[in-house]
Length: 245
Image (cartoon, rainbow, N blue to C red; front, top):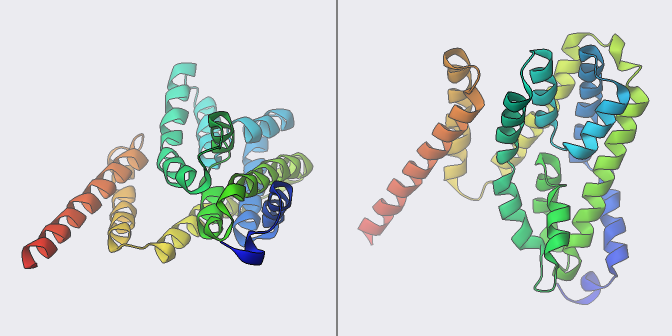
């Protein structure tokens, strides 16, 4: 980017990232964290523990798995493995975003720090907007958004914790469901290749099937099969195109 769009300091772009808290993805996530506050309160998790989890275990599904495992009486090792497997899904997001925001002079420690902020909402927001940011200020922009998103949701849960305990379970569940629905819609509409649609479609069909067959591994199996099927179909399409040329 050149001209007026490339002007500004790291601080000014950090503040532009901060203003992203008023975006639709951030608002939807905040509503989801209201649902998380209700879930944590019902599960007997204290307000301090819930707020700490937001800062240390950022992704919302990981926190749900952690609390669910504790409620089910799972041991520490099993809970650790479950949360870790849930977090593995974020690795491709990190691999996709970091090359978009780093420069040759960006220190590794800074990339590791901002990588902790990468979850579904932050990733969708950044991938949609980061290419309009000068490369030398992309880390500042993403750090502004990601840091604000974490802090605002920590404060939000602290404020609503004692209020949401009266929510009917269906309300809390609907609030929870807003984030995955938004994420699915965003990925579908922003997909640049049909193979992504295939992966999503297969995963959506396989998810309920594996929930009935192997409820403890349903998401893992649906993702593995959906991704493998998408890879196989994309490879077959590519070979067909090569054969025609």
